[in-house]
Length: 91
Image (cartoon, rainbow, N blue to C red; front, side, top):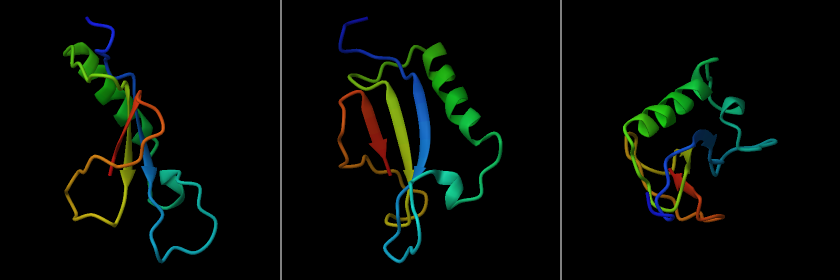
């Protein structure tokens, strides 16, 4: 594996603040959407399966999935948010 090729280590879920939201907001998905005890485990299981299948992602090894009402239901869009090349944000 080349130094720029990475395997996925972590998949996390967050919530994007909607324009009409009022009150405190920290982006944690459970504070807005109902989640189960298995929600975080699902991301971990997907990451492990991608590792098992030797999926190579390029420069990023973390995927942060942002649940948002700003895009059409059922669509995934690579986010414009960029903080670190090791993290890929998806809305």
